[in-house]
Amino acid sequence: MQGRSIADVPTVRLAVSRLPASGARKGALLAISGGPGGTGLDLIGGAYPPEVLEQFDIVSYDPRGVGRSTPLIQCAGGLDNAGFAGDTVAIEAAERAEVAACVRDTGLDVLRHIGSDEATNDVDLLRAVLGEAQINLLAYSYGTQIAAMYALRFPGHYRSAVLDGVVDIAERPHEWLVGQGRGYQDTFTRLAAYCAGDYQRGGTECPLGDQVTAEATFQQLLRDADARPVAVDEGAGDAVTADDIIAATYSGLLWRSLWQPYLLALQDLREGDGTMIRHFADWQDSAGTNALTAITCTDIAEPTTDRAAVQQQAAALYDAATFDNFNPRPVQFPLLDCDLWPFPGKFVPGKLLPTKPERADHAAPLLFVGTRHDPTTPVGNAERMAKYMKSPLLIREGDGHCAVFNDENSCVDAEVVRYLEDPNSVGDKVCG
Image (cartoon, rainbow, N blue to C red; front, side, top):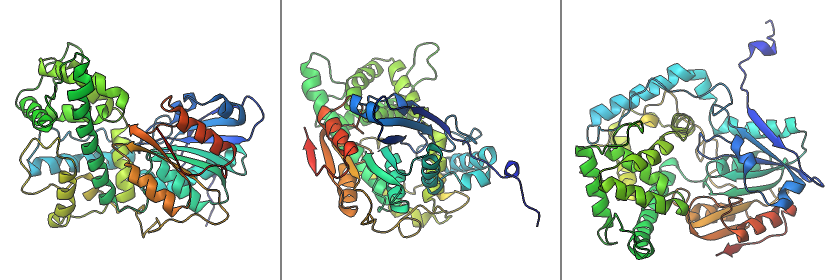
């Protein structure tokens, strides 16, 4: 059989940026973005402390399928299932169209190699290309899944690994989705308390009313927008629907710093102007939706045509976050994109992932960082992973998703700097 040249082999190209250390260099610090589907090149501009910039090259990259890397995940021919609430047939038709568009526009062979398995190996390829015997990792959100798998797969190839906004890789997919739903429900409850308390005491009307009725008030806003979309300024986009408000809310809940502008946007909505809510919703829609779907399903899909098989899990997810349940509970939950994916995922516990991850004895401890009221990666994830991997746990009291080197908490940043300077120097700690 005649061999093939490198030009004949399908190639993935990753866009990478590198900022050299300004002083006595300890190595390269590779930043791994969240998502899945989040771009990563801009992580090179994070609020890194002077000690980090002095001792480490900062390296960032767009993961395969994302941003400026190629080939790019594309699902342009799908249908939007917004507005089909309660219509199982219409929702499933839209989901099938989206999956078909991903296969057609991205290519089935690319999709098969776009998941977290390959992304983990990409980190080691980057380490080799950078000329590092050992790499230092700084991972955010979904990126912590890649970092954790890297530590398990290449235990001798990393010097340190900071995981902020932790994914528990030992959870089954439906378990982490339910946990995420509960996290957003908790944050909505805390937002409602803030709105009726400090926010309103500051002289601004709370658009959610009192804390007891906040969820019912919000659901009525959704029903009103579902019946009659709210107008926006000319050129701002389409009128705001209930689905847009939900997308905007998930954006607004993500960081405490967004609570005030989100509530102002919600008050504008109540007064008939959906422009600011449209901006929040569009930010959510632009945050790598196609890549998120493709990578997630490539990882965790369990294709089925048996509706009964997915009902219990779908019901648990529906019940995990109740604040946005403005329509009657479905009699039958529809099949969604990962149920309709063309192949099963492999990045699940007991298959590609260990059912109980354990750090190798000779490998460096990792540093797991969690925020007490993180809506999307609950703090329990960090607590469990730190225990599995016999590694220190750093908890930030407060709200929001990810805090390391984001000008968020000086105590957290100082502890991370100490860890990066000596991975064996830190223990468990809580930062206020």
